[in-house]
Every structure is written in C-alpha cells, then in structure tokens.
Length: 277
Image (tube, rainbow, N blue to C red; front, top):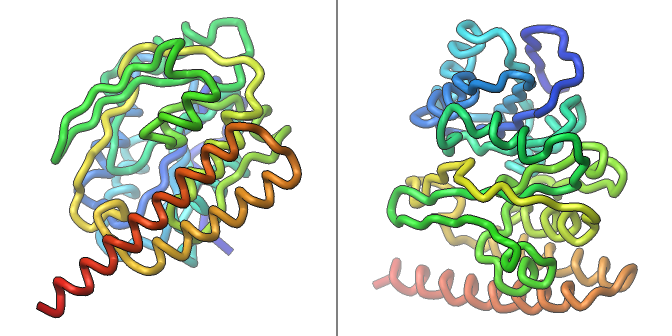
C-alpha cells in the first residue's frame, strides 16, 4: 500500500490543492511555499510523491515539518502524474479541486482569494483559469468567453491541461472523471470528459498558475516510443467514448490526436537518425 502522512484531520474545505511530484527537488519547495503563503487558507493541500529517486521526498518532508496542513502520500509504484492525481482525488474533501504541478507555482499570494470570489455562492462545474508560461518561452494565456466554449476547447485550445481549470469535486465524482494511470498525455481524456460534461462554467480572467516550460528531464522535453504508445491508447479510449456518446467535439479531438501521433512518430524517427550520425 502507498504510505500516507497526514498532518492533521482534514474537514471539508473550499479548495483541495493537489500536487503530483516526481524528481523535482529543485522546484517542489517553490510550489509548496506558493500555496502556504496564500491569504486564503480554507484549503487542504495533498502532495503525492510518485516514486522520486532524487531529494524530492526530503524537500517535501522538510515542508511538512514547517507547515502543518499538508497531507503527504508516497507511492510504492510509479503511476505517473495521472495516477498521483487520482490518489489525491480519492481522498480529497475540498469543494473545488485545484491542480498544481510540482514544478509550477501559484502566481501570487492572493490568487485563491480571488478565485474564491469568482465562484461566490454559485456552483460552477468548471472555472477556467489564466496562466503564464515561463522558462524557455514566454506566453500569457487569459481565458475569455470566446476561448471557453466547448468547440474552442476541442478545436483550438493549445493547452488542454487540468491545472488551467478549477473543478467542482462533486461534479468530477458524478461523471467519474479520472486520469488514465501510468500513461503520458493523461490530461487529454480527463480534460475532454471534464469540459464536455460541464453545465455551468465561470472564468477567472487573471493569472493563477505560472508554468515552467523546458525543464530538463521533464516528460514534455523527451520523445520516445512510450509517448507514441500512450497517444495510441488515448486514441483508442476516445474512439470508445465516441461509440458511447457522440459529439461533434470528439471528432475534432480524435483528428488532433491522430496528427499528434504522426508528429511524435516523425520526431522519434528524426531523433533515432540523428543519434546514429
């Protein structure tokens, strides 16, 4: 069984902050501090260490000693980011879920307070969040009414990730929205199912996350056959979903994934050729 260290008995909170962590010793404390320094503290904070082999665990445990509201879970087998998020989702008690990858961080200490005000007394299923990309490239992404339609999300959204949305936990439970485990690109299925079933949405038109691009050894900087295999698994799952409940958006998603599979095959072939030169 996975090991779990709970700092205190958690009652229902406004937000559950969920952070998967794998070999990010240089970044994890920044992520933790960005949560702990929030002016809004009606939160629970769940960190899942997915079999790190560097000093990530030591950094997390140091933070657990410093902050008393962290629930720390250590996987005994690697389940990748999707599995780590599922582990946290299964015990989360917050009204809303905010995903924060361990190499990213919250933009400033007021973002959760501002997000709470956006939600107010309503019950939106999904809140779309702004974010800023930093690192080897710079980009500011602020959602608006045009970019938050279901058709836009399927056809044009360059960043179909779970952390640029805030999710109502009971909504995720109702539709059994979970991540494929031990798979790269697990975001595709989770976000598609989560966005397409949403009945009520809101927009937080300010930067909530700062995303680190181009981190050495990150999954997105590597191309290998496992990436291609998992893209094909996603395609198969999308085709099964299409059979059960057809939407025009799922055809768009499938077409995009086919193109992405071709691109990843080309990139892998080029990498193999270059290594032999």
